Length: 237
Ligand SMILES: C[S@@+](CC[C@H](N)C(=O)[O-])C[C@H]1O[C@@H](n2cnc3c(N)ncnc32)[C@H](O)[C@@H]1O
Image 1 (cartoon, rainbow, N blue to C red):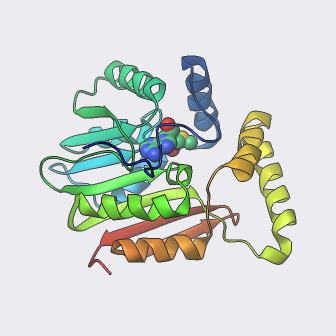
Image 2 (cartoon, rainbow, N blue to C red; image 1 turned 180 degrees about the vertical axis):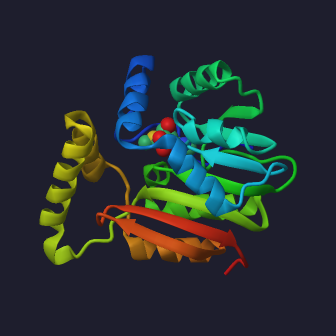
């Protein structure tokens, strides 16, 4: 079937495009400086109840820190990303860490076609904001369609939970806090994110999750700009 002319082109990156191995390595180092990747992965695996016989997918796996940690605890990880450079870096890192049960696939939220048993859990961190809102809901609907009923979704992203009367102050503080925690590069990336990428509001994200058929078990908002949702697949609404 040919792709309709109205289909969103998710393969063209918006905002920061990690197009070289050097940029990807720098991204990985930056993230390692202010995120405790092992502790974060442990917390996610605990939240989604990851079991040794589970198959879990990570969407927008980037440098694959979660995928690698999860692969040590479950049967198989499917790690997808639209960036061939990210995927190559992730493949090399996973091999260096002796992981052979991760399938790295060049695909995105809108194009990945799942074959095989329905997934036990899906994890996606800092990736959904690459899609405009219409396509976010299409993506979440597709995500639900790949999972078993009662399957778990862990979604973390930049989502705005701010008071619009004070949005300028809130965003300025958030950028400066990030500068202190992670340096100028990360602060500049976040400024570009706010300017160009498609992060949405908390109430829109919650409604989208609900409409895609997820029950939100827990929603946590940090610094008015970051959100994590732990969801269980329920009924389609
Ligand atoms: C900011 S990075 C986050 C990477 C990783 N999840 C993390 O937490 O460090 C965003 C990733 O999402 C990927 N991405 C962008 N659009 C995507 C899409 N439509 N489907 C899947 N991945 C996408 C990018 O290539 C990039 O690797």
